[in-house]
Image (cartoon, rainbow, N blue to C red; front, top):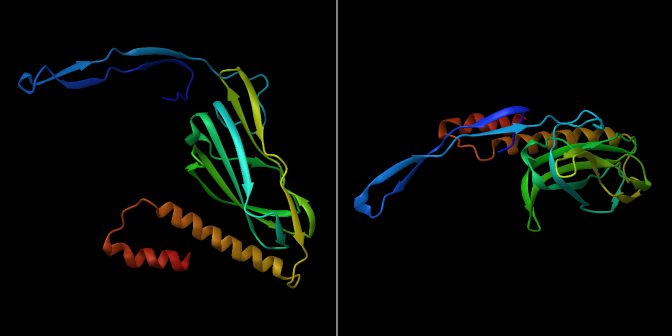
Length: 212
């Protein structure tokens, strides 16, 4: 359970059914005691900018699918938040915009990577210029109840070797348009995942996928 408000909260009694003795003894029901807990408000002092309510003990690991790339060619940046706390409540990892790159979030979901359970964020990154570039820092402010302080998780620098584009200068806008369409498709298909679709809906679903 993760409280979302401060103050006195009561966890209501819960009925539990169990077999009494043998199978002939029948089923008995007992009720747990209700429990009242006091939830302290988070401190206002030292609260970092962009703090969005992440509370727990977290760590951050990241990787890129390649370090050598052509200008305007996309790479995938994967960031995994893991640890103790309500991972489902973490909806964003922040970064400072940088003219060297265009960055699009393509995926955010609970996942297990290399045996570690966490929340995975994936970003599509497109370098706008050539040379040795460093991705902007990604960060997550959170409150540690164990240490009773606010902290900020930060990524290590990711260096990229970007070769000059082999396409015309006007291709940048084309790449951006294609990327937006691809990401729209990824988000659409992700939102349809785990949903049951009736046969009568199949035509409408296919229309959405091809039109979107």
